[in-house]
View 1: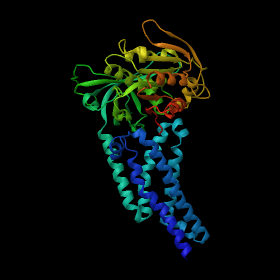
View 2: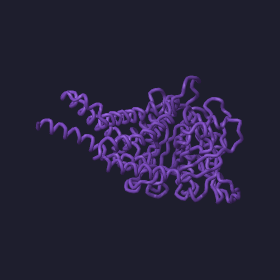
View 3: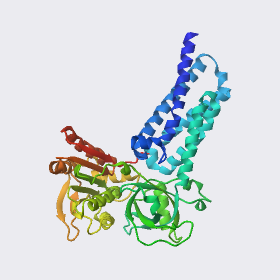
View 4: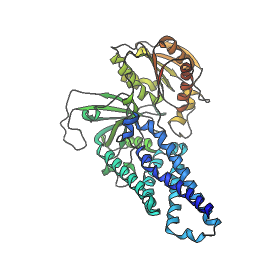
Length: 465
């Protein structure tokens, strides 16, 4: 009997311990309203890996709870218990948790972010009443989780700003870039920091046939912000009526939600189109002052449209440093030279272009399905091995642009070594946004200098959800 008591006590504890962590799990999913952000000074995309890790731990604990109970019923010849409400709801709950875990795998997210997001939101809500009626002693944790869930939904919906957006595709036929431009009240950008991102959603009136499209689409980094002196007078509910800034997003449409935006740009319906904007968000708001004298050197590395993160930071540093790009270097790897035109226009003629080096890796053979930004760009930007080392071609400054163009892949070891040898007397900041392979290769090279005693501020802009 003592063995049974200890066995059942352990079995129940697996479930109770897991349920007790659900409120924290829901809180880690918050985009802006969360005490964890203020305590850790980390943005939601930096906390997201911990959200995923805790989710895997909870699934493991709930799986142990379910497995041990099933084993107990089978070994004790209590199969009739499988017809009880408690056991049925328990089996439903563990099935939901397993589906949540499998639908969150990277391959599923890459295949269809919208599918992942739809399942994640629906199942995260469904699991709460299932656990509520499963057993009564979990209800305090379920109530806390439900309260957090409701508050987060209210906060996110109240923080949305309606606007009218112009969507257009670049003229290049292969892998065109999608540009989305829209006005936003300056009051919504009081905390804006270069390098932050926003979320887009379609307004309710567009959802008569496809209600799932109201779900927030992928996070999109703000490529540029302009602040005209004029004030809008349009009183349309989808147009800001206060002093506005004009934001531009640049997106490489692939599949799922980005394909949806591409279809809107290609639609014969007139532009601009109503959109809902949420944000800005991002860890850039917690960065140290990179323009201060504490940093003797700053290295920005971007792959493809990852420059939407690094270019605003580069331009901001150039402005804060009195129009000088000294100590700031940006390495930008693209597949075609035409892909940098928007970036050079963003920086402007007086934006310190001399600190930018562009590596043109050359176009690959067209055709085949695109599985996502990382899968599409990794081989073209880093080579098939994804290490980013070697392959540097001839360099040359182009007339009037003062931008160094290179043919081939960037030699990250040489790039990092040059920055640390030239500016390594003080603290060096290294920021990267691009394919996962590029970030790993850069981290490996920077880590070597950290091992030599160099002080480094490191940030890799990655969206892992």
